[in-house]
Amino acid sequence: MIRFLILCTIFFLLYFGFNTISEFDSAVNISVLDYQIQTTTFTLIAVFLIAQLLLMIGLKTIFSIFDLPFIISRSWHKRKLKKINECLLKIISELIMGNKQKSLEVANKLLPDLGENCMEFANLVLAESSSSLDVQIQRLRNLVGKKNYSIYAAKRLAQIFFDNGRYAESEEYANKAFNENDTQPSLMIMLIRIYAKTAAWNKMIFVISKLQRADRKLLEHYSEEISGYYYLAARDAVSAGNDNEAVKFLESSLELKPGYLDALNLYTELNVNINNSASLLKILKSAFISNPCFEIAQMYIKCSRSSVNAIYGTLAGLVKPSENNALFLAIAAYLGLYDKVAEIRQPKLLNYEPKS
Image 1 (cartoon, rainbow, N blue to C red):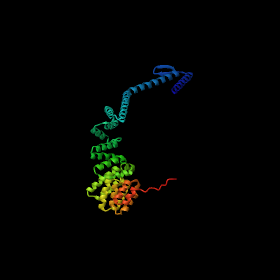
Image 2 (tube, rainbow, N blue to C red):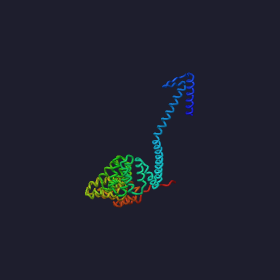
Image 3 (cartoon, rainbow, N blue to C red):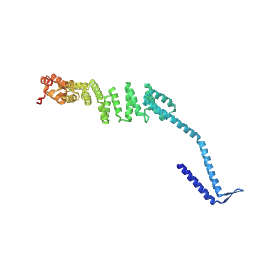
Image 4 (cartoon, helix red, strand yellow):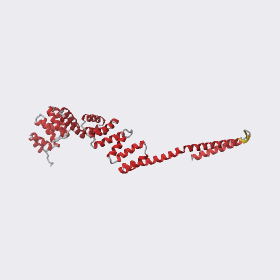
């Protein structure tokens, strides 16, 4: 509608212009060399406008001829890009649907047509789709150092090498990813596992401290696993004859998992040797609250210098005996408190008188 109005306006202006010119039209004589040309002002203007129009058409035709190779190339490039985009969407959709083999086939067909930027994406697809470990590693290595894929590729390589027991290479790539982004908690967990496998305990402690500052909730989520690593570090320290360092490792372990029996047994043994009973009893109390069981109660009884009644009273103050009848029955019997045994076996009944 707008175009129609514009055309109407142009025709109206032309009509009005020609009528105006025709009213004031006059004869014009033009001398060119020995030739005399007689015409009118209207004809002269019309010829000039037609000449201008023909010149513009001619120039546009010439430019189009010169631009023809570029136009053909651009048209071919557009068709190629359309084909590549369709293939990329096909690759992504097959990956999402779990058809890795189909995705791999499409990606391999697409490789000859891809540019440098798309090649990085193709390497990623081929790495994730391939069932060959060597192909995965090679493709992911091609992505390390690339702007958009480097951290992911390094993390994947670290995980692949870790899963296959190649811990030195796993550490290398995990550190590459960590150096590019040292705030990713998932990377920290991976490094903690690697350092635990390689017994690099000081490095492990450094990464755990960073994780504690970065994501306390994630540390709590993995507390049982990390507690186990501290226990392994303590055992290594004991083997090396460094009991004091072992105690520190065990305290860190029990801070994360207070009721960890293996760590408690070793901690009790070491603290008895070091004669650090106050710290030991405090740890055992926390452990008993976290995991009320006879094994921890027995450790506490052996380490405490209090009377049997005082020991029983302390343990009964930490958890409710009424909710742990069997446990406190065993504790009372172990301590030789037979009045407590009888009390637990025959709890006092509330006086009850039926209404008349």
